[in-house]
Length: 44
Image (cartoon, rainbow, N blue to C red; front, side, top):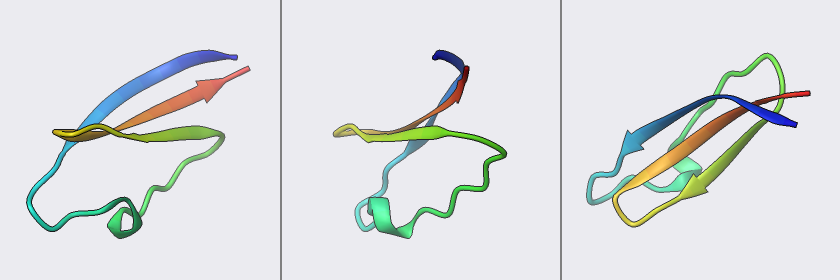
């Protein structure tokens, strides 16, 4: 699989992974970093 697009969502003090709602037409990977959340859209 290849990464189609990668984008970052900045964190604020109260935002958690469970607060995010992601709409995608395929597979994605969500990673949590200290300063942001990273969403990688995947394609095969």
